[in-house]
Length: 112
Length: 114
Image 1 (cartoon, chains in turn cyan, purple):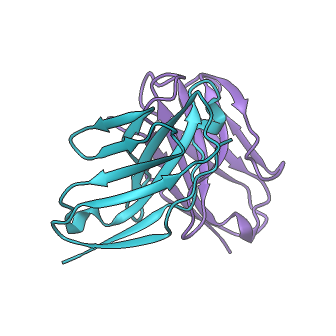
Image 2: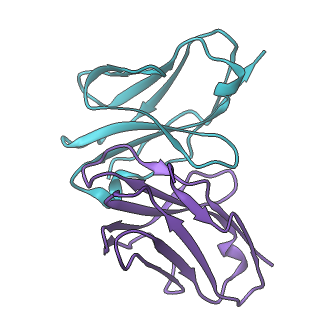
């Protein structure tokens, strides 16, 4: 099981780009990297998933270097409503029970 | 419904009481997960179902915790003889397949044991 390490908290200002990096030094060959967002009193919400290089969707980008030992979630031009906890998960699609193991996450505060 | 539905949203139980928490996953979703989330912490995995089969229950903290999904849709998490340390938010999630795709979470049930 790949353990992940993320910063506990980050602050940013509205309109800035935010990059949250996750370390997963013992990631396995079959593991995917997935990011979730959680607002208070709500369940986590899927943001993006990737295996290698770069993935982009309408919400975020995910950058994964060649060695896959880390990944960076990039949120362009954040707004106050992006204040939330962000979780990085790693797991294999064929090891399902372990595929969704959450760490403590990164608490992002977006300031006006 | 369009999303994962959990009931009740809030439950207060006296210590020693049994509770049952319900999860209605998205229709047709094969996989279902239960998590426990303590205040200020990330969700902790409890158990996983693929259809009606409980394939992983390694996260259940004690034999007081029991989960079932008898017809492969609705699931119930039962906690017997509740203790104060069981106070947490219990989250349910479902995914369309068993291949690691996007998980959809419910809003959770906040259990307070007094």
